[in-house]
Image: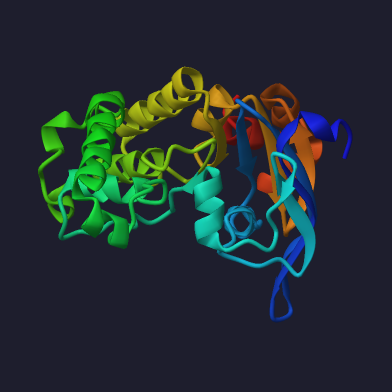
Length: 268
């Protein structure tokens, strides 16, 4: 992979199989710091599998993954999180019986320095750290995602679109350097999708967080991405800026096989 030093995250020749099914077949990509990098492809192409390898939910059989020059291929998932790689999921993974604020606070516990023992001995230190963290959530994350009006509501009572926003807030509470977003607009109406796209841009531009996005809404992908990678049957078939991907014949064939329909599908 050329110009390796410019990449914040590098995936090198990653292979992943489930029984006889090859989910990822020698995939290599490089993600630059501060960009929005989208991974697209037909259903079953391996997009979510690639995210799962990056944050170590899955363990590749071959290849390696480097974050800021460090090989993280053998680290546990909680260590990946502590390094600054946060994640949201296709399906909402929240604690439905807890309120919004408590769900968000859980995301930041990976960075709190006062553990159970020190919290018991030095109650003041632990409390001060907790209060500082809560202030950060309330003044920055809740404000950014416009969820002040639901901060005390129990999560399972909220509409799906707001639950997705809370999950994004929890990921931000981890203070990520890289944010992995797995279909953040799935199940949303047009207004909710536009809001989510705006929030992603704000996170990227105002906070400088690198975004790796898996999303089926090609309008959103083409509008907000700096670069894209296209997977098909576990292999990378294209990588480039949106305009290049939109007119790539191999990509068009992978999606629909008919050029005029594919242009529409790919957000032209």
